Image 1 (cartoon, rainbow, N blue to C red):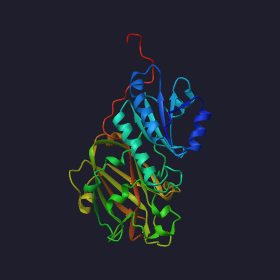
Image 2: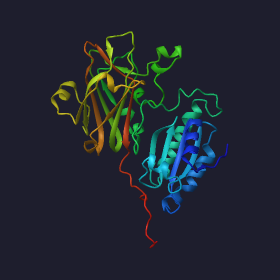
Image 3: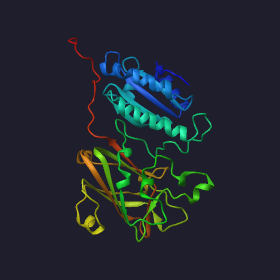
Image 4: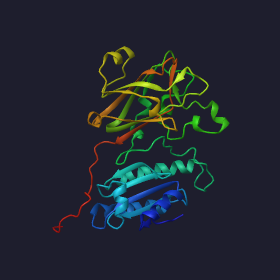
Length: 322
């Protein structure tokens, strides 16, 4: 269905659209912003080709006319595109970057189509899933991971391959479908409660937040969530366990039961200054819960910025010397 972007005139109107549409793409712009005008035709074309009633809605928000929204979502650069899923921000694109904007939106639209939602008949269980809210100003950059070159040490062979960790779909353990019981879309340690994961990126990224989802079976006390995690960056190759134990981590993390939300996800803030130029990440689950024989991880999401992005047009009026 051909549909031009909806012009937002009030916070109430926008809040209503967030409630009525599964996915919402919002273009925060200003009429005086040159980059905003340059990318506007691209955004309108995406809206007309990809809009789906109650599933994928495109809107435009003039930051000077609807200041309440630009303040609520802390818009500091123009244009800024925010992608919402079920009312929550899941990704953002700052600046007039048509390639990145097309890639993200078309990926979401493709996932809706594959889930059978273009006709409104899908359940949404196969679409993009958010285990925790993404910090404002950052986006999910898990698609920057070179999954084919990831390595996982001490993995249980009966669990899934390492690539399932970066699946955008909702973990089967959260599904009410009885057929999901035998789906192996998680990884689990084998010999003990330790896992060592090597994650290479397609380029240099900035990491802000690490989200880990762990959903051990309630009837198995011997399988637990991670408790002690060590992170190492920019290692040229995978480490072994003895090397990891002998190396000072970039950041050490200790999780408690309070860190896990209802979706089984821990939202871990990283020391951003240490993760500004990250080309590889090693995640070492050093220990699970007391008495555990194994640890399990269902999903990993990496939140930050994909490479160094140039912000186009600050949120302030330029001079008259154009």
